[in-house]
Image 1 (cartoon, rainbow, N blue to C red):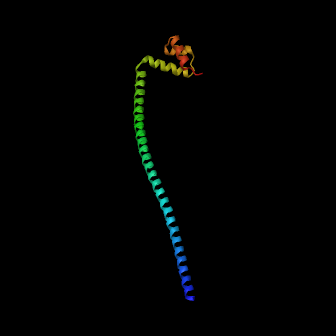
Image 2: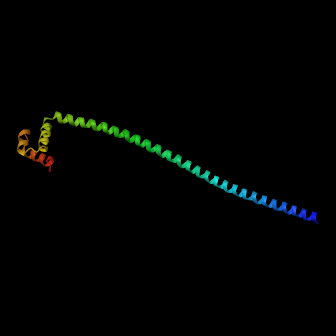
Length: 138
């Protein structure tokens, strides 16, 4: 009987050992499956982030192009504004009447009285009064 009991104990031990091994294997497979699911989820998220990055890069390129176009347009407008200012200055210098008006405006801004502006700039009363109402400091 001793041999039979020993054989049974060995058999039971082997079955128990086999059950523990199966349990450990099952736990590892479960853990691997969970890790695999996490890796897949991270992969999907990474792909979505890469797509979003591509979209944002395209939008940035569009904005950069728009800014460059606006900068070129502003530069063109600045050049045109300078041309117009020079033309306006040339017109003022060419027109003797404009010189008188410019001088009258400067005198008004410096606080000269109405009669002095009329006399120095040879302006009629109505024109001098109009200049005073437009350019007098309040």
